Each structure stands twice: as structure tokens, then as C-alpha cells.
Image (tube, rainbow, N blue to C red; front, side):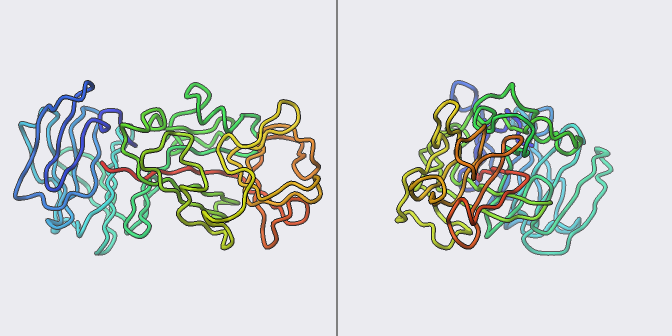
Length: 315
């Protein structure tokens, strides 16, 4: 969970900075016990937990910056911690170790469960030293526009309620999307899943972007499509995609060319509503489409059941 309060805490070198809603510095925190802070999260009282990569520990800092203590260290299984996340509803602190064995620790002083995991947790995953926070999860064929839900908080359930919810009737969304610039988002990852297995992924450079224009060809960093690069020929590559009311509603759309519906070629499309081309016609929407092997939408397209968009931030 990324709390609103956490958007007001930043790390710079070995210093933690607290910023108020007007951008004024509230306090700074430094300690010999905290070296190379990697992850940062807040509890329900806006107290801060920071992972010290070089000091192999977790430091707790009070919300006024006046009190701090080391709450976990190498003796309790912390080794080169990176990602850290606190769920205030379940009172679970998740810490991702880059080294060492997974451990399960009961933090008796606060009666809080602490889960340690090796590079993966329900809401934090590490890929090549990048910590990814899911901010949007969309489900196929539930009748909700993915594009509208991405832009409209009221249309979605709040992440990370997925921990307690199996209802796929609404997409899931985190408020970080609405604070894109303040959150210092540096990378975005888009994934498609089919029966809980990843089938497609793309990553984007999101520096100096907003919550829509990050999805573009110039920002493309890597993907599972071996033939898709920032130099590829495309006629559409945007979150807005190709929308014509009652004709096309192709969102988060990456397309190569049009040559009549049977000869349309592309890579990735979120079909939000009814489509005039047969290759995009389904009984219910939204549908997550991608091409496999060839790039012809009619012959080579397959579907996935879940879309996940995650971000990596400078906390």
C-alpha cells in the first residue's frame, strides 16, 4: 500500500526528508544506523519505515521526526533490504531482501506480522533491482471502460483491496495515479496475465511524464515483443489510442498499420467497447488483446484476462 502521507517523504542519499502539502520542508532525518536507504513506506499514523540496504535493517521514524528506532536487523533476517510496504488494514509490513533466506517474523512489540520474502510479495516485486508497485488492475469483460477507469477514481475499487476481494466487477486503482508528478515516477510496467500467468509485458521510461503520455513509442524501454522498439513503424501508440464513437474504442493501443480490417497489423490493444472490425468483436468488454507470432489482428491475435500497470518511484 502506498499511503498519501508517503508521497510527502523523500530520500536523498542517506537523508530522509519530510515535505508538507505546500512543499515546505518539515524535517530531515539522518543516522549512522541508516546507510543507503532503498525503500520507504508509512503506517496508518504517518510514521515512516525505511529499509537500510547497507546497514541490513529497518528504521522506524515518528511522524514528527523526533523519535526513531531500529525495529528489524540482520539478527531478525534482514539482509540487503530493498522494497518495503506496509498495509495498515492488515497491519503487515512486507520487506524484500535481495540476499538471504525468506523468513517469517512476529514483531511482538507491536503485535504486527512481518513477512520477509525473497524478491517477491503480493504488492511489491523486484525485477533487476527495480521495485514495482501495482497501481491499476483491470479485469476482462466486466463492462467497465479501462481508459475511463484509469482516469476516474470513483469508477474503481481502491488498491490494495485485492488482498481481501475476489470481485472482478470493478477495476482496482491506486490514488498514486492522481499524484503522478509528485510521486516522482520513473518507470512504468504494463503486463497482461492469463490464468495468473504473465503473457505480455512492456516497460516505459516515465520521467517528466504525466499519467497518460508515458504510454508512447518514445518512452518504450523494453518489451516481450522482440520486434517492437522506439524505431518501429506505428500509426498508433498511445493510451488514448484510436477512438471514434460507435466505431472504434482501442485504448492503450499499439498498432503498425491499417489496410482494411482483415489486414490490420499491430501488437497490443485494450478493446473498451463494441468494434466494427470483426477481429475486435466480442460479446462483452473490455478485452485485452495482443498478437502472438505474427502481427495480423485477424489471424494472430489472442486475449488475456487481466491487465496490471505498475510503477517504480524515487521515494
